[in-house]
Image 1 (cartoon, rainbow over the protein chains, first blue to last red):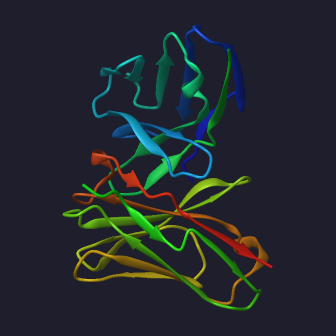
Image 2 (cartoon, rainbow over the protein chains, first blue to last red; image 1 turned 45 degrees about the vertical axis):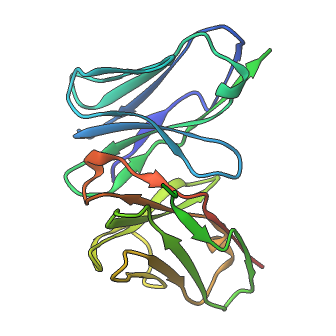
Image 3 (cartoon, helix red, strand yellow; image 1 turned 135 degrees about the horizontal axis):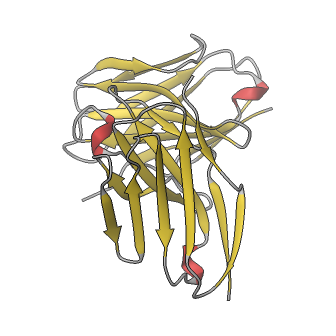
Length: 110
Length: 114
């Protein structure tokens, strides 16, 4: 079945640093989504990408839909303590099912 | 605008029992999807309902079922519970069907099977 690869499992950065996360797949997706999940809560949509090559920003967050449609990256600039959480990529195909990566746990040291 | 509401937040059940989880989507949203989240498997798609019809189904056994009502509220049922069913069950709603539009998730129901 389809799988999305996110690595590493955990990332530790200093407050103020930029961080970049990749998500790769062996399958093509029509939509790429990035979610953030805080403890005890459901994932919250950060950025949605709809077209190969698309680059979209949301405040300090920037994400790109890879040209091959098999990958995406998320960049967080000037990290702050509230950026702590689990970041998931998700790919959407022709149907409604989203395929999620296993997530990257981000820790930000003050 | 109220978000996606899931009830109950926490549930403890015994093996062999059945359980029903409830999800109220954002007002006006007609698509409701369910996901199971576990530390080992991550987020796994269960099924999607749109206009009271199941549109897509994931690779889960028949013990997992769902339905959607005319007001778009959805319920998910798990029968003959197993220890491995312990998980966070997330409901997500969208205005229409299709992953293209992204989904808004609820806070989930934490199910523990003992």
